[in-house]
Length: 146
Image 1 (cartoon, helix red, strand yellow):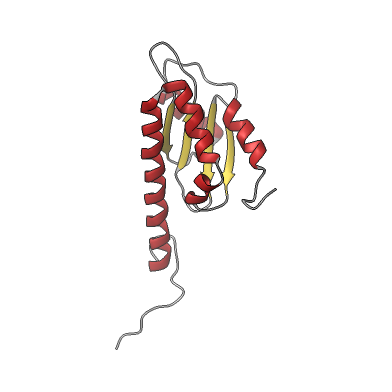
Image 2 (cartoon, one colour):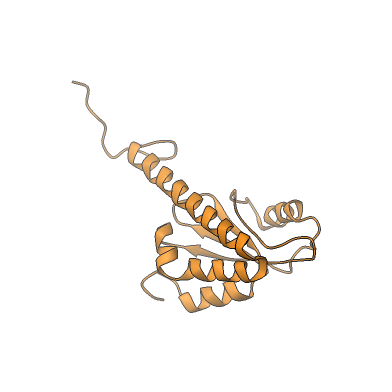
């Protein structure tokens, strides 16, 4: 374990070896799905997906998303316990971007940048919901009518 709450070396090994990887986040219901499988017709995929209710549901949604590929033997996963920005600061995001770019070229690098921006916006919106006491949150204080 290190300052980020997990073993960065182990996470790096998973990023470098997993065919399909799902990253869960402490603050977000959405998941980061990385499918590094490629063929003559299709490159790798990085996208945000909804939280699955079961492993079976995740495999089914992956098959729908990538019908030309057989189901992977396993889907690797890890929880990122910190804010999204620390994913970049830790070097983990760079590893993800480097692997996908090596498999899919510069368009994958651009796609990684888009997804990172989307993650940052999702996290900001979630934090604002928590502050405002929005859906799923309870405000710690309420404004008293004057």
